[in-house]
Image (tube, rainbow, N blue to C red; front, side):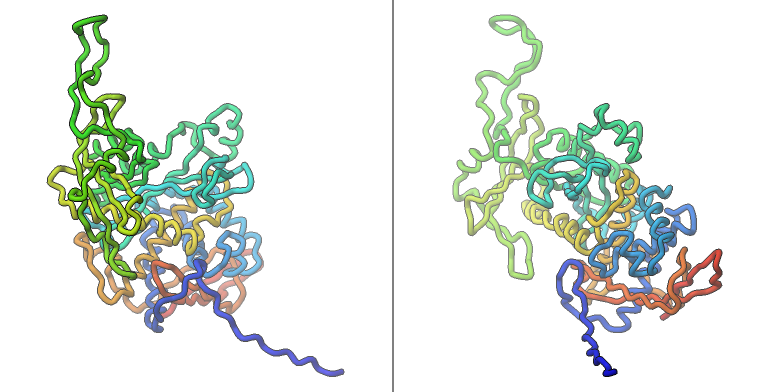
Amino acid sequence: MSKISRTKKPSVKRPPASGRKASRRLTGRDIVTSAEELVTYHQQFQTVFQRREQQRWSLFYLCGQLSNLERKTIEPMVLELLGTDTNAVRALQHYIGQGTWDATAAIRRCQQLVAHGLGEVDGVVIVDGSGFPKQGAASAGVARQYCGALGKVANCQEGVFGVYVSRRGYSFVDARLYLPEVWFEDAHQQRRYTCGLPEKLSFHTEPELALEMVNDLVTHGELPFRWVTADEHFGQNPGFLDGVSALGKWYLVEVPVDTRVWLRTPRVEPPGCGPLGRPRTHARVARTAPPSQAVRDVSAQLSAAQWTRYTIKEGSKGHLVAEFAFLRATTVRAGLPGPRVWLIFRRSLTHPADVKTYLSNAPTHCPRAEFVRVSGLRWPIETALEEGKGEAGMDQYETRTWVGWHHHMAHTFMAHLFLTHLRLLFEKRILRSPLHKRTSWWPKRLTRTPCQWTLPTSSPTGNIVIMLLTARTLSARPLVIVQVAESAKSRSNAKSRCSIRC
């Protein structure tokens, strides 16, 4: 019998989940440092978990999100890292979908680490929504609504997210799952129970959820920031703007072109008797006052001398330059004059018809350059959402419960923050945060001692799992090599000990 010769196929390196190529090479020491940092980083969250197996599953899920798997759901994670183990799949599904650990505590710990590593007094909190397409109707909050990921109305879940930005970097700091109003009707009572929605939960619009996040950040006081920015979906909501102002923060938000303002505050006639007719029961704008104007009409009336050219930022492809015009205006609140604010226009040099309009409650002495800087900070939340979905599996979840969605998002924030930390760690020149503390884990260099932990399930003997930590934030591909070796294995109870040795 003749032998069939088989040619060995050359190994092919898989690209990162985002498809972006690495921009630099890492040394062996960098790879070991990545492994050390991952273990130390996860130790910062140990107080979040009540039980030791929760800590282990948390580390395992974090490794799965940071892996180079194309599909970062629970079953592929277990199959790739532990082999065929149905018990491990069920245990991990329970940990994410029904676990008793508090996702809010994990997110709050992320906020503390962000404050230590990225915090600046004039930091910016950006709020925005993002959709997650879904096929069925059993997931919490799923409904036919506008999905930004698809650019159309589709069956999806919608979340509201907060991202913190400073000169050092950006990272997620909070999230809320938006529930459409139809979910609070009697017809959805069984679905609310099945998905585990809290009984006292009530309907809130996306701007209300965003304001709730900002309020929590101010109340807890962990994160230093001065500015709040958002797109016109939030900027057109007076309740959101007035709420941010009441919290003592400055907002710079985009508004629709049909937003109406007065350039001069009109006179208001109080309730009472007039010269003719019945007495007025409500205040009103004097009939002799000029009417309010749409901001599109205001921008069309600006002269060439009112436009000034500013450099927004220095990008990899050159300077980002635009023209700005700054005016003071009075907002409209229920037909009456509202707060006096900045009315800011920004137009492109190449397409002058492309004009963006902003409102800001910043004080009159705020430098123009500060408005310009903050107006150019829209991209971090878009990039963070793209990185979260492309690198950490933010949109690759199969849990349907209210608790499961928040658990998954908390882990996504942990994964993204770790990648941000690695990017800063491997930069040649790191700008230390003014709030840097020696006791914080962020800038601390680790000692070269072995770190060990135990996985809650068995795994193949001598199996070596190589996880590619790939991220656009990292712009590199470090390897975390985890050697899985069996110890004290028995038929009734099998455990595996994992160690990262330097």
